[in-house]
Amino acid sequence: MLSWTLPLVALSTPEAPRPVALAYQPASCDPEKELRCMCVGSVGSAEAALKEIGLDAQVIRTSGVPCIQGDFDRDGNPDYAFLGPGYSACNGAAPVRIVFTKKGLVREVQSLPRMMSCFQLYRPHKKTGRDGVPATKRDALVDWGEGNNTWFYRYDGKRWLATSHASEAN
Image 1 (tube, helix red, strand yellow):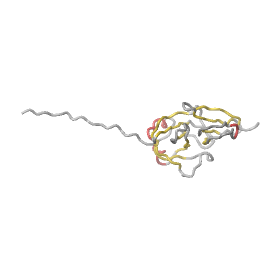
Image 2 (tube, one colour):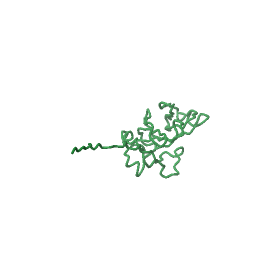
Image 3 (tube, one colour):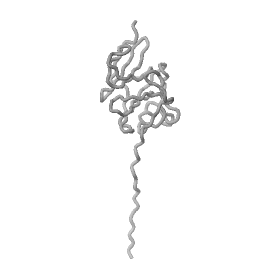
């Protein structure tokens, strides 16, 4: 009698992509007006990129970190700008990572070309804004300078452009 045995092959299914699910804590935080909105939740597959700037995924899930939600690429999906440790609302500059999402998953992670210290969301404006910040059709980021320069960050569809504008008349 012949006995046939088939080797057992470990069938592995690819790990399902982890969704990005973030919310402001408190929910009423307005990143256009406040300098320190905290995001709490899951950053999906962006954990490693955020760890590069010193952010811990467990801290993001439990107590949150400073971030801004916008739609920087104008694709209808939320995007998130995260500040690294050292940011304390205009009292210390920190590196920034932008997590672009698509259908609830991480699409791409990019860095801003400079560190930021007075971090706010800048909604689309048809006219030049405060401190000469230019008009824009997309959500953007602004780093308000006091007695120095205000930096404006706009995503052009491929990369972040940074421009400097005098903050106050001398």
